[in-house]
Length: 101
View 1 (tube, rainbow, N blue to C red):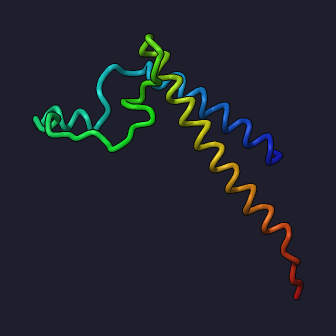
View 2: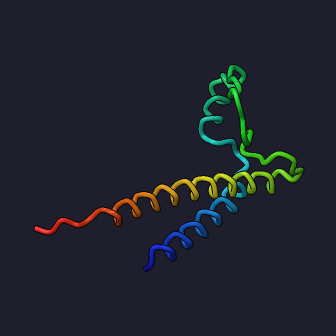
């Protein structure tokens, strides 16, 4: 399988998972559930900055759609970072002359 095809398939799978995962359960995530069960959720403090607070894309009224958009945004940002990093590594390796024994 080619390098490019592998990346495209990986991106497609990640976007599919980001689409269906918010629809899987209405229960809070693990850390939030523990905080609720042990009654310390009210002591939580907000982060100094929140890009996508509570995994809900701002400005979208439908909560499921807002969560899916937040997931897609996260997938695309991380995909871009990992792809770019791997491209730099591959390019750096290709530019080094090979040493044969």
